[in-house]
Image (cartoon, rainbow, N blue to C red):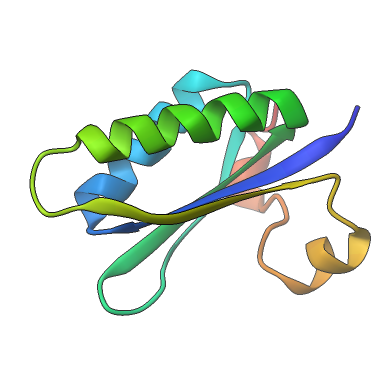
Length: 103
């Protein structure tokens, strides 16, 4: 089964929380990373089957853009079938904390 990585970057934590919540509810995906970029930007990363990640990222973008306040989606990206090199070098692998939620 092809696996994908989906990332949404937001301005503001409430927006990142709204995106993460919608992503895990919107598709059969696992939240693998939350981190702070810079200038108040946060990003959340999910992994799962390609079609599910597509659906989850779309739901996350919609929810984040509806979040009241100053938050907004600044960018997003989906990597279908990432090569092993990307998974090894970047912090996108399943961790001990996320492994029990793996789909």
